[in-house]
Structures are given as structure tokens and as C-alpha cells.
Image (cartoon, rainbow, N blue to C red; front, side, top):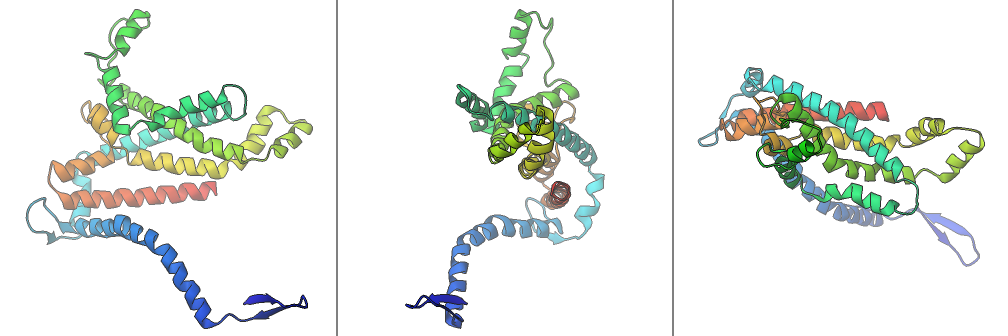
Length: 304
């Protein structure tokens, strides 16, 4: 239905023709077509292929053979799978909590405009411009016990007496990797939260102060509730990235020591390219994807 204004100022309504609706529908499909093609080629097609591979015995060389649900039934027989699941969940929980706290603290620190705040915003965000593989190599070179500069600096300052095994024990390897992730992503998450903070109207804070609210009350009763959608986005990105962690463990710790830092994606990688079992790797990928979707759906439901 469209409105037409006549010369006398009266508005009359008339029904749009079927041809007009059809033309608009075609225009809508044309606008959506590029995105639909990209999603179909880069997401839906690989997803269908992975699901099909998970239902077959699919060696790296040789013909495939249908064996559903054999690949899923043998997941429990993988000696690294359960250890990788527990380690990845622990890593995700610790990383998400620490990363959220550090990012929120940085965002609150540079929220207000004052002299020099632009410099600190840029400095906090700069590590996010470094490639993750390059960041992992950088930390490996800095923390290496043979040629890294961190241990000599700490000994010169009198903080340590002997070299620290940064990636030589399971606990130190885990927290060294978490330190790498915090350095790399805290500034990026800060930028997300800063966008949400700046979207909160200043009048709300002024009204709270005029009513006698202190800083803690303003933070808990105004800032956090109004920041919830932004926090939800940050948590989805953090949890997804942590569950799919690969680069930092493959490059920085190589899954060691003693397979203590093997993530779920590393198990998929080893099944595919070390054991040459693409069908089993595809089944692990499908299970990981289902768990990731379910966890994010639950988290979004809680934060809605």
C-alpha cells in the first residue's frame, strides 16, 4: 500500500501492483545475492563436506568408504581427546575471565576524554595489529631459556636466581600462553567495550550522581546493565576463540610438555595430518562445532 498526496492536500491510498511487489522482491534478492554466495561457498559447502566426510572412512590417499557412525563411536578411543577437552575448557574459562577483566579495566581507564588518553588507547590496541603467529613466535623468542632476554633481565634485577621454565612445565606453559593471549587481545576487547561505554548517555550518569550514587553504585547499577549486549558480544568472541585455539599452542608450546597443552583443534590437526584419518578428524570437528554452538547459545540466553 502506498500514499499519494493530491494538489488539494488530501492523501489517498492505493494498493501496489503485483508487478511492483515482484520488482522489489527481485531487487532484495539481488542485494542479498553476493552475501548469500559468499556464505554458501565459504561456510555451507565446507560444512556439508565435513559432515559427509565424518560419515565415511576417508583416508588421505585412497577411496572413501561409508562407515557411519564408526568415526563418532571411536572418538572415545582417542587417547588425547578427553585430556584435550578438559584442558581446552580450563584454558577457555581462565582466559575468558582474565581477558574480560583486563579489557574492562582498560576500557574504563581510557573512557573519559582527557590529555594523553588517545596515546594510551593506541598503545593498548597496538598489539592487536600483530599477527597471532608472529606474536607466538615473539613470545617464544623472549621466553626461551637458551637465548631469550627475559630471564637475563629478571636475574639482573635480582627477581630470580635461576632460569624460569616458561614452557617447561604444564602450569607455566598454560599461564605463559594465557599471558600471550592477554597481550594480543586485551586491546581489541577494550575497543569493543569502549564502544559500548561511549554509547551510554551521559545524562544517565549525571542523574545518578545528582541522586547521590557513588562510583560503585553507578558501575554496578548503570554501567554493567547497559553494557550487557557489548559484554555478550565480547564473551562470544572470547569463548569461540579459546575453544578453537590452535596457533598459540602449535607455535608457542607445540602441545608440550608431555601433551599437556594439546587443544581440541590440535587433536583434529594430528588426526588429519599425522594419522591421515580425515574421516575421524571430520567427526571431531563436527562434535567441536556442535559443542561450540550449544555453549554460545546457552551463554547468549543467559545474557539476553
